[in-house]
Length: 202
Image 1 (cartoon, rainbow, N blue to C red):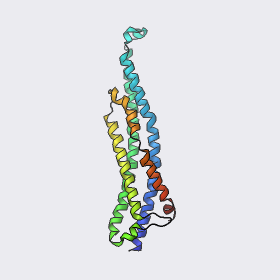
Image 2: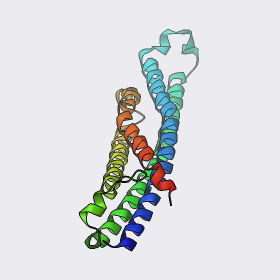
Image 3: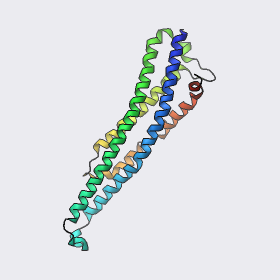
Image 4: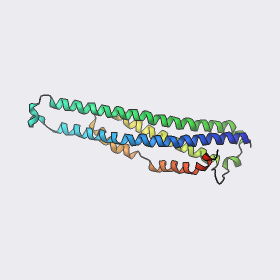
């Protein structure tokens, strides 16, 4: 076993765990900002649907020329604005995903470069303050996979939405909500607790 190889791997693991913790906070914060925007999308779709179901020519509002067209235009404009904001949020989520992926790739690359100097016992040894290297590598890969899949699902949903497709817009908030994976997020939080002593012991 090479002590320098293990030390450099430990250093990289600490850095990755810290990065994961910071990125998880950003991810949760961006998702929290997305929720009211998704609700707005659903509300705008409902208003557009209601407008389609009303015969303005049969109401006192018939005296206002082009009222329906103007209302529809405003609703479409508002919907486009919300979709634009959601796409901006997706850029933030993509940055989080990329940051986590890059960190995990760097650790795995370092491990592969030093694998000849790291025996099985070294890789699987746990202490009172540190999980094993193999456990930490596995946890980081699980977290990276979670954020990659989450990003892809949310991006795919947003790409299907159009301002003039009311059915998709009405269903969007519940579809977005259904993508929440509390168990996976709890698992990542649990992992960060398990490595907290190790991270602080540098």
